[in-house]
Length: 211
Length: 256
Image 1: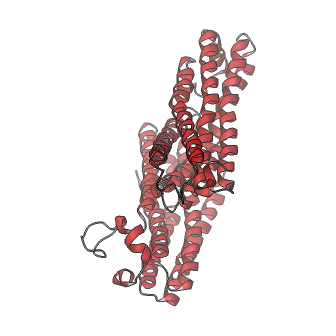
Image 2 (image 1 turned 90 degrees about the vertical axis):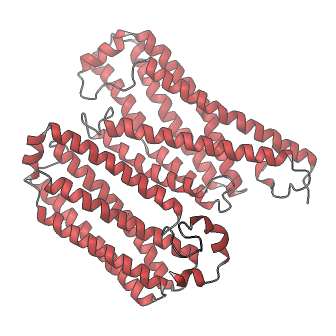
Image 3 (image 1 turned 180 degrees about the horizontal axis):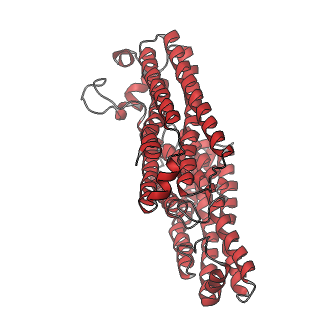
């Protein structure tokens, strides 16, 4: 992290001094990304938590329907998608580290890998949807499928936005040397991507595995 | 550089007007929600209820519905002042050419209309409450689907306010965290389009997510927006009352 702080940047002292938390001397501990992105991330996770809450509540009163419907879900797809997203997150972590050390080629390659993972997640998801739809399972079939389509759909929407964010990060990574402000933005983007990953890690057991 | 004393006075007066417009907002909200509550539509009937039940709702106490809807429509009209204040504040960020402020004004107008028309539908239903139940149900459904389902003007409005807040690098009007909150709220509000798909469950127009959660998020956003605008208007009033020596940064944006 030292590489950022060591760069002389007029913005750092003014704009971001308040973002520095923890240690008294700057650069010891701070929140990645700018503070505002965390409003967004926690707000979003709060909404998902509410969604999961009503899902579990409705599940407890329709246990039979939920369990019977769940048998039509292939845990395999969910599992593969979990692996894909986890590896994309690792790529993003490594890419950010590479960017901090100004290893331009590494960083952009790693972000491309993450984007590839995200795209394959979306493809698998679409494949899963089309399989469900062709076997006659729709949004309005029953409450379980409502939740299935809505929760995974909202997550997919987040993932697509995340892909846009990663593309932005890719363009930044190609540029090499970034201002501290820009790097904060890229870090924020990475945090968003981790949130997409984290949400899926909750969604997967909730929809596919919980009994 | 010091500003002409008349200009400062002029700006001071318009800032006071802005503050007055802003404070009309709690009144507007009280009217809208009070009216809806008086009409017995808080929360709405389930979309899965039969047309006879809807007819019963209209027949039960048409006068309460009429009075309530008049209050709500009045509240919507008053809320127009708030929409305008948001735009004038955005204009301070954007300067003379202010596409975002105009978009906010437009989108705010449309979302306001999408608030008035549903109340008008209920009012029309109550006008002849002995109509065929199916027709009353049509009015009731149109009312709530329009109110909650046509969310995109509101999403646009919140997004441009967020974009403007991102532009405000000096954070003089909008703090940066507010920009992120706007982005998030705009994101969350999109989920309201689901009301078209469901007649029961959490995403129906009386459901826990589409109605309760979305409305709470929107209400919290309105409250935050109100507080932020109040703070920035108060700040500029305070600045202007001591402006004689250093009024330079009040540029032409206020009176353009």
